[in-house]
Image (tube, rainbow, N blue to C red; front, side):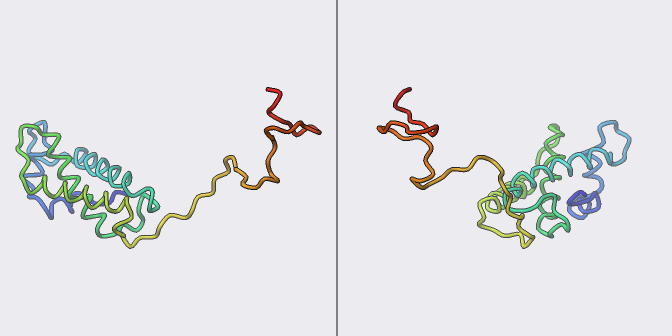
Length: 151
């Protein structure tokens, strides 16, 4: 599920602007596939910042994530059209979104969503007591649990 939709973008930019950003064939229409791709790329970027602190993809989508997805999606559409000058406000919105996401990834800002469940690691374990030690240094071995002195 995408974090925003084409209509969310149209709430922030005009239809003419969205046509200019997506219509590579001069058909005079919004290319929905380009919008969908820009949104998907924005969502992947958002998830990459939030994955260590939250279960992604978000469901339901927090309002702030929807807003960030719109800002990053519009930025993505501008970056694909090098002939169009990026408005300063779009660059600033993107920079603010990245700054916000960095703070989320550092745990300085909460989204109010559920934090991910702790993961269990079935990898190797270490021991911390002398009794658990398998090898000794400086002592000869009396059994199958060995010494490193002979190596």
